[in-house]
Length: 332
Ligand code: SF4
Ligand code: SF4
Image (tube, rainbow, N blue to C red):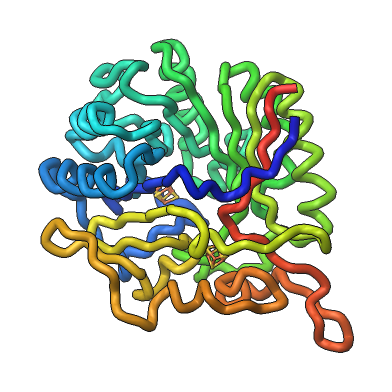
């Protein structure tokens, strides 16, 4: 069954970057150390911030990420603390290197998912994007996690450099025993800004022709598949998650964004100061969320206008959805 996952007003999502450090140097890495530093948060600070968001939002879904979160020597303690708090789910996003022997320090009951990033179905394609050896290491990590009884998901960021291998992902994921597959759209932020965006971003025609059909084929192999809506049709309603949903993107320097497309700029609307979450003075991302423009997402228009198209009279031919609006296909 296919459904659009609209923004929930009841559930919150907390994306906690516990470190910005990483062993890889992916071509499209979204981490911007000029904005977010090179810090790894000490355990006691992570635990205080976990408490802060738990008290504010109750049953939030927590994603621990980086950088590479398994580089944090106390990730296992962090996971166990999060489990004891009222988080609805706990996920670790990893590049697959699984540092500090993390699989032997946490149990499958401690985490809902371990989510691996893979950007190709072959080493040739993946390693061109994520670095030499990363494909084999990630596959080894997935196999080890599945063998140890963890539920495993995979994240694939679609770009012009790997869309030709999306059709090969289904057989690979099924063979590995992966349960969920997340297709992401590339965001022109972090390192992608220094790359030519037309080299990475997939155009509307290609996206619509390939991605939904491949997602459905992969779901037929028994996986739950999630992919971003990206291009709204005339009947779709546009909503900005920054206005209607509770998503928090937390960085080690205390910045808290409500929109991931804003992360390259110091326009975060919240900040953690002395263990308190404080609202930032205008102008910040919240002011941008209020803008009602015919192109849909205002941040898309500002930072990645190449995926817009206009008629001869200047009106946009379609609207771009919020990057957080997803379609989900249950196993078919
Ligand atoms: S995309 Fe993820 S794995 Fe790749 S360099 Fe950035 S933080 Fe590391
Ligand atoms: S991606 Fe666009 S629509 Fe979504 S929260 Fe950000 S500004 Fe709003």
